[in-house]
Image (cartoon, rainbow, N blue to C red; front, top):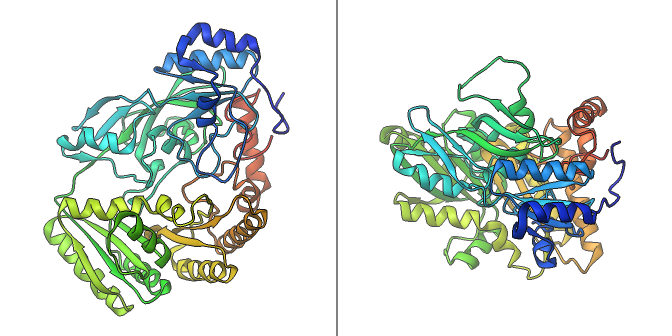
Length: 466
């Protein structure tokens, strides 16, 4: 029977003994190791898992799941722990499956523009290994996340405006099911009409339908020419209005990132950039030399019409890396502005025409609340994040942050947006799922979960309650 609440399902001694016999010193019950695997970047505090298994192969994962299934004990996949929504928390106890040692790129096929790899490979590792082939993988969520975790959460990030999300870039998967069976979904072909699309079902399932053990991804040719620029605006509305016009005019911009004044101040402090402390767009252009020149000229004219000024160009790899590293550090940089704080982070995505009013309303409410905050966004595709920085020792601040978050989400839903553009539901956004998708759709999701995981052992308590 399915569990109906997050009641503990502690791993019994018999399971721990069986895991130890199978995995030896790759099984750990040490408190420090369990705590490391029981905490992510979300604001939730949950007891750690009962044990951690360090998997090194698909067979390891299959054996661990089979043993846990025999005792109806939960298993929770773990990549690098960068989740913001509580995905890896052992809310019912159980065994954490650490996949970080499954970190090999198995093959890269430049003639097919594909790579097949294990789930512990990180985004930056893959790009290092395929760079000499003249290829790259564009999905960049900011953190150097594992690609297994990026599949599980249907991640996107800074390049999504041009290259899409994980949904568009995953061709095939190898997955261990709740019974320990190993299945394969998809092929290396770019399209298929063969039955249900199980690959898309697994991408975004947040570890609740299977444990991903192998991934085949699309790669893209490195662009002939590449340029990055920053531009500053008198207010956040002007920066977002510029973005909207750029997209509506069909400029094939690769990245268009928003940082509010608080985020700029944070990355200045952290990375010593010396940027002007004003709302800023960080943009990148890919293509031929002529194409990039045309794109940049068009964007500069649009920005100028909206008060944008002080364009600063980064054309060398070192300059671009410096700017994008600062953007990737924005979250951690902002946390350092209030030592000891935790963050409640929104992840709304809205139709591009409604983006400006959504961001401005969120900024106005956050400023009026008195709670420290910062705003960043992949605004080229309508996705923005406002993070409220709260003192975990002051319960009133957590309540205030959640109240502000709720208002942001409800406005997004009212204009046809979503409560989560890329982070996933996890624990934090479950309350909005029925409102966004409807009771019928959630009932169908539950039916799929029951069919594929009848004992509810795969990352239970995430996405929705059962």
